Image (cartoon, rainbow, N blue to C red; front, side):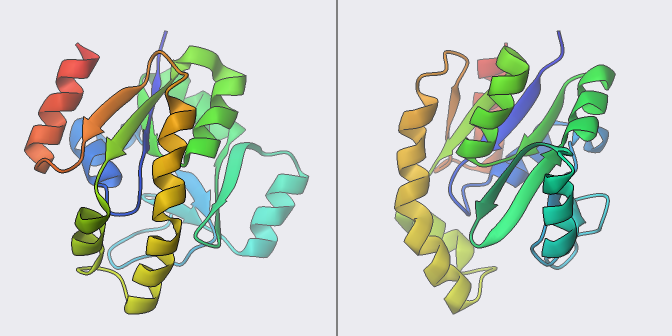
Length: 180
């Protein structure tokens, strides 16, 4: 049975960096989002960037296996995209806790949650490099909510917890050991 490894954690935890280092680019489940692309991101490679109107139409058309709102933007995985990825092999995606739980309801233990744990200080230090002061303020406001979501994940026996205070190489080693 193929699995989808879902990387979850606060902003700046390194979930996207770790996922990209652990898996091949073609294993990524391309999610939809209404947020604007960050520097270097490409439509169809990092996300499908769509308008809120288009996203809401996709919701109305029942095209999503899961969707959620994070930091005032919509994120979702289309049913067809996830089914194709699982048919091809193991896959991955950074996601929210709510998104994972919704996918788990549909796909069960094929969905594997990977929580990246970081301190608020580490999050601030990492986000100061890429976020505007206003964006950093917003992310700080939802940090505690993100951390509290770990409690919801602890009920899943296949949960993998990674120490996000470590270097990326050390995080990758932790992940590989957990998957062995």
